[in-house]
Length: 424
Image (cartoon, rainbow, N blue to C red; front, top):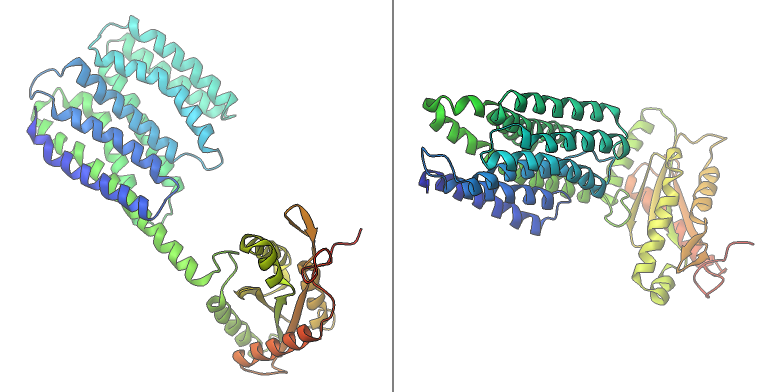
């Protein structure tokens, strides 16, 4: 047993446990795949500790180490692949191409050093790689790359470079993982830098390994570098999760979680900027405040999930006319507000008011039945009604409630107080 590996194994174990606990507290859609990949690196590191120093490793240990290298790299590619393909499609593609590669690494792990046993796996890899690239990925580029890669492995094996064939193929897997993570992760992410550095070092280790084993003087240094990248990748993944959580918190601070619209805080900032532009002579603006009629009755009769569905549908309908407004937000409950700038004769307050009403009154399916929501709508004009943002909102709110109290028609025709059924 090689006790020199125990400190690095312990450090990697601690980092994986931290990543697991962080994932449980702050779920991340890719972290479960990352953890699976790191699990195989832990298995590989554990098997490595049982290598006898200075001796040829046992075949079983050698197979575990090599197959875990390949599986971990493939899993990382699965987790960092193109977002245009579903997780299941990527898994199928990678799984099919993993079989011949694992056959090659297992054959080498059994210390077989004659070409014949490798050829079936190489032919299978060539056929599967080309076929899956064409039919699953719809990419002739990938097909050509797979063909070139397996032909290169075949040539190396034919000339007796078995170690080069195995380790350079694994090097390609980790190089591709580095490229995929580089494309997928945010460019300003510190975690991205750690992950890319780790995968780059890892791929270089695989590339240089056939040379290192023939120069024993560099073995100790190579061993330390070999374990460095695993910690770098683990730390990078922890940082990516923390950075994403910070971004989510920043987003939630300025947006309504249910509808995704700006909240009151962000709306106040946008209204202030819009008023400042108007002060510089860019025209008048109008603040609209709307309250859904009969919304309380929907919650009481159908439950809060139905109410949330109505709010989301109304928000989506309002978003479709967002190009005509400078800003819109959900203030809370069933209250929404919008700002229209550059009021003109052709785009008057009543023009925007009609646009809002038509958006709100689009039919919504609720429990399979169409309903049409209505809204009480108030407005205030800057600077005609007030030059103060709070007073503008207060005036719009007063006008909205005066209209709401005068309204006599029910919100739903199919159930009193909810909404109107759409015309036939």
